[in-house]
Length: 355
Image 1 (cartoon, helix red, strand yellow):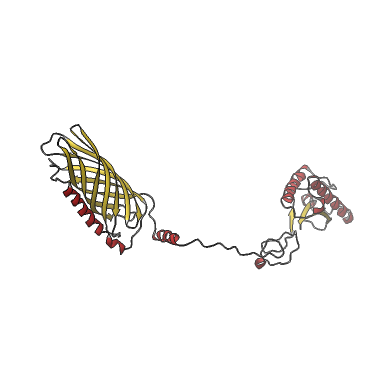
Image 2 (cartoon, helix red, strand yellow):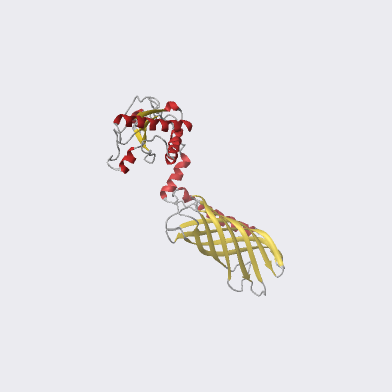
């Protein structure tokens, strides 16, 4: 046992020395999770006399922890035919491996492996469960841009256990493994890697909110306000200038020589009510109009009555009376011809001038 422990220490020390050049080389980082599968060939040794080739397999999952270190968890199994024996030795186990990379490159990345397993061995009714130690040398070689790599390694495994039928014994195995490593997920770009590294070393910049000046309180900053000094409660556009807009309600028509609202007109006025409630600072001029039938003075009075009936309806819906004034234009502002019946119907209307 002392000879084999000394052998294991010698191999591990040599493996560690190979990691020293990693202090000089920069790493190409790919910190995605990956899966790996490998076939295994076990060589004949003095501790186990093989009758024929012994094969096995392993499957694992791993991740880069640093540019120079990977951690893998693996499960494995193999069968060993001993010379002159009738039964196979069946081995299976689970373990953790540390992979130390002195160099990572786009072509080949050698590594040193140190591992510990929990192994179960069955032979002719004998069942042993014990830890094993592994060390070895290997390499990864990328096969495509996504990151799929061919891998191979040569491992030495030290296995202290009760040899079937012979009492206490120590076993050692030399194994050649070869297979594939397949990353999971999207490959990180060099820009993403650089940004992640920068985030690790840079403190977040302190956010300083600049004071925004709006001298007239119209909601438009002074440096963008084309109309400074706007009076309070005046609606402005994006440039800070007062809005003088007309909301025409074309569906509010009045019968000939009438100031009575129609049911359709009341529905439209309910929409105006909602708009005024949503904008409590808005005031409006209720402007009444008439067609050219009859004397001009009469039409001014008729348009005034239409404005007033509209204003009273809005008051009944909860709009403050002081927010509305009336204006009577009579027949002076037609929107259509007064030569046709349809045109005159269009001219009998109410509009809202928003202040």
